[in-house]
Image (cartoon, rainbow, N blue to C red; front, side, top):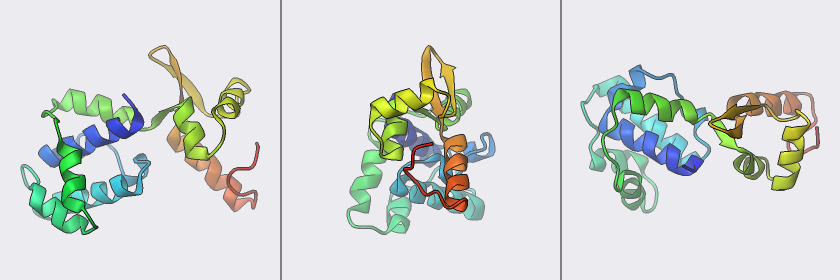
Length: 157
């Protein structure tokens, strides 16, 4: 499953079962898309203030407050089924792991460069289910260190 689909499944699950926020330690930084981050923050806010069993489509679309927000929220929920807590935990844990090609897009570099960096140990990777994945949290931390050191994003390590 692609990162974007995985993020959509996790968010859709949180709309249907917002109490899942209590069983898995995830936050907005776990989502690559700004729109998904915003939806996550809205879901978290609703959960913290209202503790609903389920979040209404119209409430979420209303708080999202962007052009075509109803369509975006509908797409988020399209075809999703209610996940068990175990299935949700597994999907949420996978949020942090990117395929190398996804990490390349995230870094705005060519996929061959990302594969080369992974082979040389310059990307934080682990083998998961037979494929090499990049740890997005460690990657973000490394980028932050580069920015703080004045090296900027996109420079070769």
